[in-house]
Image 1: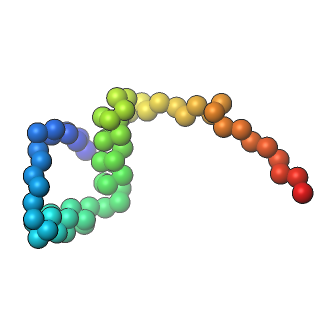
Image 2 (image 1 turned 90 degrees about the vertical axis):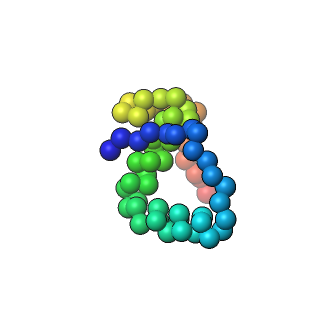
Image 3 (image 1 turned 45 degrees about the vertical axis):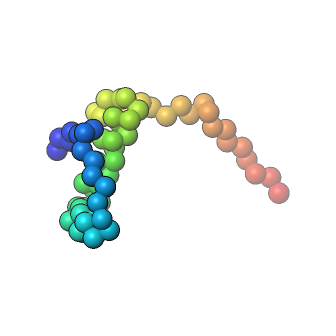
Length: 67
């Protein structure tokens, strides 16, 4: 599935128009919505969708809890 971000598309509609739009968009499966979110993140942060950056694990520390 290929996504394209149209940066020129914007329309501030009425509450009724927005409700109809969301009623049409909501039936998308969770997997479709997650793919779209991953695409938007890749566009926003400028990385390749098929090769996302790895998490820097050195930024986190683990320790044993003692009682």
